[in-house]
Amino acid sequence: PIGASGARLVTSLVHELHQENKHNGIATACIGGGLGIALEVEKGE
Image 1: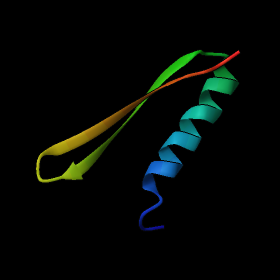
Image 2: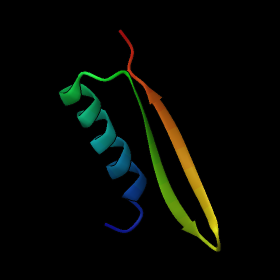
Image 3: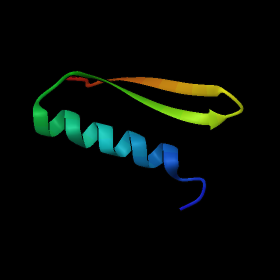
Image 4: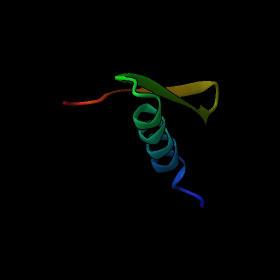
């Protein structure tokens, strides 16, 4: 859905971290005009 790309990226990343038993992950996205955004996620205890 339009406007839900960020939520989908973060949800997918969190599920992958859980499945792979990893603690850190990075989600990145192009936001147009030569710009981008990144988010680092750290799994808590």
